[in-house]
Image (cartoon, rainbow, N blue to C red; front, top):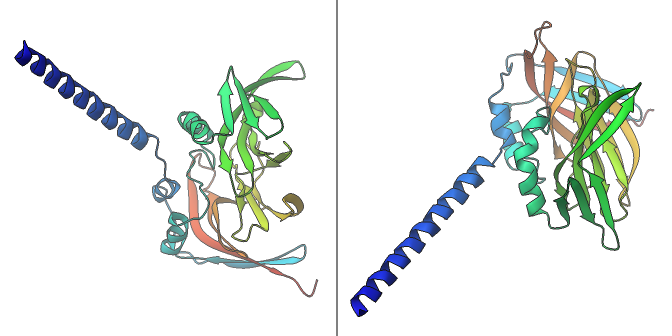
Length: 277
């Protein structure tokens, strides 16, 4: 009887070990499956590194200085970026974010999702945001879908994508301090000193979205004056901050009207205050 007991105990321990090992392997597999590296996404694109581009534009009270940069310099900055931006769909692949949305909600403990409703804990109140919103335009019904992208703790912003009508959409943030909504054409990226917010997007094929970039001043946690630049022939992709006055980005051009065929260049844009303005 004692021998039988020890055999059963041993089998039970082995079974628990196998179950733990299997669960661990599954978790690792799920974690690997849910990993996304923006740098890997861009490395798979086709770039033109043979053409040097240099330009200077006078815009508002600033002078914008554009120059081609080395791909190694761009990816080194992106791989060591201080803000978490490894979200699928941060540029145009919005639909790819669906499998990452729930892990993001589970990671950020001030937001939850239940019964098709996002609920954000603002401290003294709860901010509720529907996952789906039905709107009518000229008697035509459209379904708007809100997708959660994550919490920017340095700014206190919960970031969402709102899309669905006319294939268009845009990013917006809910401020944890007061529930104020702030809208952007692209995912908001803050400068190292947190004085400026960069937002950029491109859309060559549907023309339903803004093309270009915005710079917003951030004073006392509030958005102030903005700088906007748009070019009809090329757009901003993969925009990141190098320092407080320099942005690295991928210049993307529509190639001879061929659908989904682009020419890309690694670029820097330095903005300086125009003292002669």
